[in-house]
Image (cartoon, rainbow over all chains, first blue to last red; front, side, top):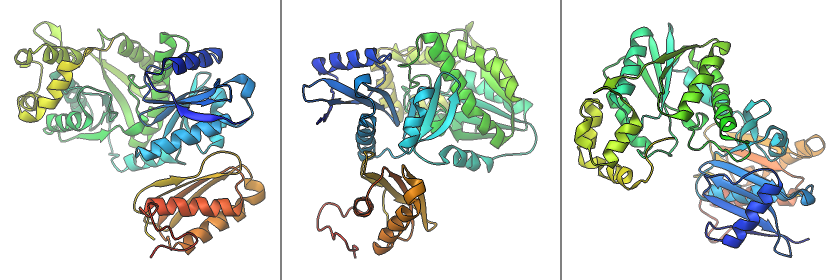
Length: 346
Length: 100
């Protein structure tokens, strides 16, 4: 049978109805984060296979069970990889159910980490993750090493106090800044503000997180049954990836800011508190720094910028971040935050 | 020919091969996976290396995901990926030869 491969655009209602029906039939839901979707149609214009991309990841694959064994997934994956390559994305990742791992391994993907019975995370480079860890190993220092992972969206006094406390207690602090572009404050800005903000601490080494630390904003949810399972799956995958990174850097402690407000991060921290000690890493959760009786949080800072209350943030931002938001460079960032409808994580 | 930017050619469909070339500095590093690795692994490797040699590619990271492609297919995919990687795929493609 001859099949036609074509894009399913977001405004194509008929295509999307077929897409939803196909996904539902195969037991998955449409992921909220997709930037391109394609479908394979048979001669009667029935959708028989689909796949999508988001950033550097391939996701949301489904093949109609009546058409399994015809190599349709290969066609869809080939098309998506070619498209990603055209967009300049060469290092590609796949999230999938554990039992589909072998299909992707046949297509030149290599497993990086897996959460038993939940999901598997693959990349298209052999030894991509291990060479990432090897590179990190150059920054390994003797003595007690601590780690902090932050999005710093944007860098606040709360972040700074967490780093200062860690820098005080450890010989070396490895500070990872999430490099995924899913935040209102773009990565180059976040990176610059973190580096300037911790410049006075000589034992802090900053690292871009690279593709191996995943923000909850881009973690795929389509094949997990409910929100709880999504958060748990995300936390466990993150920890599975953090293990080898911690080993490469000789990390003994991970510092985390307390999370009274965000449901996702709260549950995430709870899982970390359980799992990290199993990997021999101490888990330290520090209470939030307060300003004016309120805990400082990056989302509250974004809300203030959104509402045009930049001047009220004096006691919540370090000098460097404050100066940045008062410079002309900050205008595009401020505009982006202002025009965004949702600035707080649920 | 020098590999200037990453490029890909081919598909993952049966009887085809997906070839990716990326700039490298340490000779040719070939990563090969094939559905017929046990039967033809050595021959696939030789074909890919020979094609690269003919194109005078000396430094590159090459990834081949083979799905049972014939030698002629492999050669064409390797050539295409290399031509694309040095911006030669727009015009005057010197099929079967090297770009000088």
